[in-house]
Image (cartoon, rainbow, N blue to C red; front, top):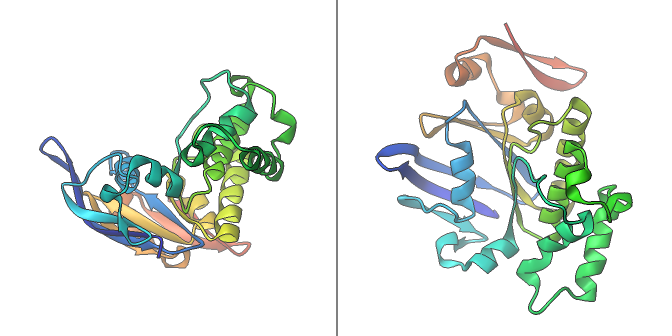
Amino acid sequence: MIVSVLDIQFSYNSHDVLRGVRFRVDPGQCVAVCGTNGAGKSTLLRCLNGLLRPRVGTVFLDGEDVELLGRKEVARRCASVPQQGHGTDLTVFDVVLLGRLPHCRWGPSKEDLVRVERILEEMGLAELAHRPLSALSGGEAQKVILARALAQAPRVLLLDEPTNHLDLKNQLGMMEAIRRVVHREGLAAVTAIHDLNLALRYCDRLLFLKGGRIHGAVEPSEVTPALIRDVYGVDAVIERIHGRWVVIPR
């Protein structure tokens, strides 16, 4: 396993957000964290990379307690993709190059520059390399932020609503890119996501948070109407259409 979460609890003041959360993520696996607004999805991601410290429990990266790793070492192993990263006039190349900072001593090496060029090519961003990030569309900018994360050469990808504010084509393109690199590189990915149909289509496992606990941890084929109703309070049917599982609210 790459990520192992053992019974973590986290509170904001006296309000419990996470209670006894336990799961693991293996190499090449993309795990979706699902649940209603305020269920603790983003909080969980911040606990995984050590930005928040659980009151109880432990997060392990490659078998090591994240709290005992320095911030630079965590950044070498774990890369985050926030909901939006649109507010800078740095060029696309320079934004992606920032992903190499955890590996730099004095400045970027030739190897760092070559890696950035390769990632831009693979992500279909090479033609945008010298344009400012602020001039790009939402879909293009989000691909750049993903490219920056990949430049870190991480073992773990943490993605907070990576398809937020994207149109349908860019949602599919973003999730396809994530799944492709996770499977190819043997990474562990954890993504907080609201769109259940995207989660069913692209993720290997779905964790449903409710009341700060994992209410269900299932593969796409194991999602049931009862689980959807329990977590979201919505009646739905689960159908297999063109070989894919789809949630259809009633």
